[in-house]
Amino acid sequence: MHLKDLVYRTRSYRRFDESFHVDRHVLEQLVDLARMSASAANRQPLKYLLYNTSDRCEAIFPHLAWAGYLKDWDGPVPGERPSAYIIILGDKSVTESFSVDHGIAAQSIMLGATEAGLGGCMIASIKKEALSFDLKITGQFEILLVLALGKPSETVIVEPLQGNDVKYWRDDKGNHHVPKRTLDDLLLKE
Amino acid sequence: MHLKDLVYRTRSYRRFDESFHVDRHVLEQLVDLARMSASAANRQPLKYLLYNTSDRCEAIFPHLAWAGYLKDWDGPVPGERPSAYIIILGDKSVTESFSVDHGIAAQSIMLGATEAGLGGCMIASIKKEALSFDLKITGQFEILLVLALGKPSETVIVEPLQGNDVKYWRDDKGNHHVPKRTLDDLLLKE
Image 1 (cartoon, one colour):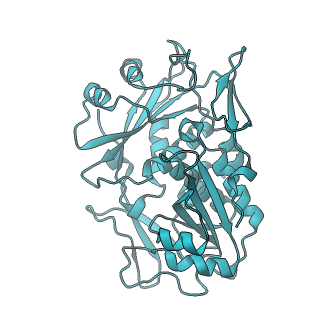
Image 2: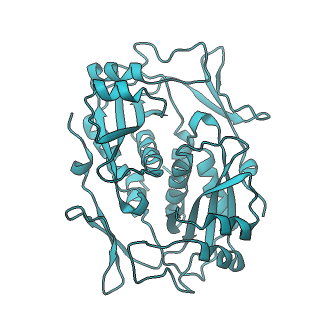
Image 3: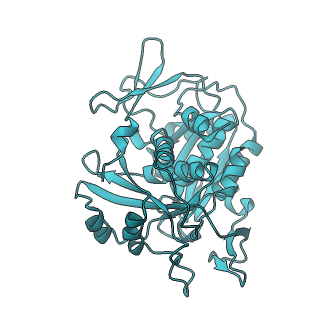
């Protein structure tokens, strides 16, 4: 697949077929993509936790905030929830400054997920203290991002942004609409 | 090309065939990949400046720090310098918090550059004030990353990290060696 197709198909998905099992080997291969991506000063301070069992996914789910703009939706219901997670940690024994390493890594992972027939969502709105407690993550590590993964079961429609309203929304049929700025909007003239 | 090949081939390159001209259209298509990548709360606060002429590239070059670990190398000499740049700006009129949007965007761009037969380096060590002055970037925008691009003219060799020494180095033949942690090193046990 050309990268453009892969990037265009890599949307943020928040509803899944929860019965779909994600192999641990697939998750490891996604982390390998992150491993081989750029890291500030080559420090490589990121570590990863992988989860693909229902009990662990259930433990992680309540600590995540879903779709802030959908005020009357509390996140995916049972049956529609992610069936895997990759948690990106910063290892403070390597550095206290993680720069944008986790953004770089997350993008490699999410593109790889699309190629593997999966999809998901990068989540930064996390109850970090409670999640660290439940997963027994020690103080050496800072939770940077949670990547929710699974087999997507929703349709995401990208459309041109109207005015300045960046809020995504859901139509009567349950399709998720995402307003995007145009290329012209992003390119500054010299 | 499979994403794994693309990610593995996307190394940080710092020496180029400076005579190679990068079309503006190519740069625009790279920004389009960034445009369609994830953005925190879908705010899309990034803007882009594109440069592919020798006079502008010469103006940008002195404001960048190159390869901090190569103490006896001041960066690429004339003839080996990048022939294009994409500068990623944060638009403070949209938000003051850019999260890791620029990491996500930069990774999409660098993968696209590899697919287009180019290569380069994400640079965060920037004399921001001086660069803003020279390029007439107003206070509305914060310089987040400079992506140096061109036709790479060096060989980069990835090898397993020995001990904890993450410093890249250059051998007698001028090959650039990059120590990378193994996948096992990055995966934490539950």
